[in-house]
Length: 516
Image (cartoon, rainbow, N blue to C red):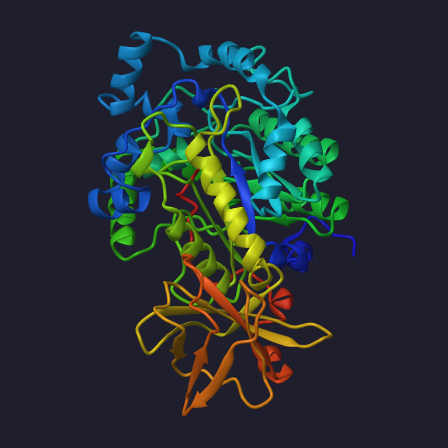
């Protein structure tokens, strides 16, 4: 169909099958912040900081190195102290641009794309512009505050081509509302995040709108990944319609909320500022970390978080392998997620209708830290064995289960012309050759198969429970899985046809305040 620049029109867009099928993508935060490569780690992840210490501590102690430009503006923050000690008082963040251009000359996009493919990723999302305003491509619409403030090398174009050449989809992140190359005040509380993180005038609105169109026209992305919000005085539906008409199978995320200009001014007043901060803290204590309802989206984007149960609307959790996204020299060894936890997280997310967007934070020269590369290669090896239970699946009747010995279970489902399959994941090691899954029925004439070996597994029904006997003890892996042939009606009754469910307006955890 031809989309028009209205909510009614773009709301008819359905999440395409490829995005449901993909399950796993790579996020890339690489930019000027990779030079200082600093953020404090002692306060935990962002959700822990906000819930236990509040928003004031969140902004002062955020473990995101990509927020460095803002963090060094907050008086007395760990990042400001680090910056003054390392570079001198008054040193400008924007001076990192020339150094980054020189060091990034060694970057090899093909090596990145090979690694992403080998890791089992089906799509890649590159940060084209973060809140520091630096452009990762030589734009025809240059920054009007800082001359030459963009890459001379076309990072966006080179990586897009390398990714597509390896049969992966390409997505582009762009910080629409926040651009601190045009501001000098720090974001130190919620009103600051809303009203002081970027310009709100018509010139900037035209500037970022031109960038989005340029990115769509030049690089043909499959994903538009906006962050925080969208500038006031603009029509986001115009952008969505333009994108969908160019790429009907494209998707947009949920961080496009808007606030009128008059409200930006009102928020800066002391009484309203105090009220908003108090209200935000109350919402946080009630478990609500989002603020601006997006006008339209194809999927939600919780950050460093997972869901408790199956969510009908499509969602994607984004997270770094450590506590942040950009390269951070403070992150070493134990700061990174462990491989068993990563695998279990991926399976849990997929069982509940989500995708995992896992971030890498390269060094200035494009080197991916060895700890991150090892995790990706191990993940790829696991997916090479068990990927049939991940890719192309949908949530089953329920996401979770348990064995009689206490091993947690997760389930996915797949239907095809040749038959329907239930996949059962053991989220911990099975001790011995026998295991019984509680409240699961295979039925007569059904086949259970070990995904690691391809061998048929002996099974029998014991009341409501399914008992399995393997030929040999399952391999020592964080998550093992079996396939169980199913009656077609059971898979058709699950959330198999989820692609026809509209996601706009679905109530689920929101994270507009969780900028990456």
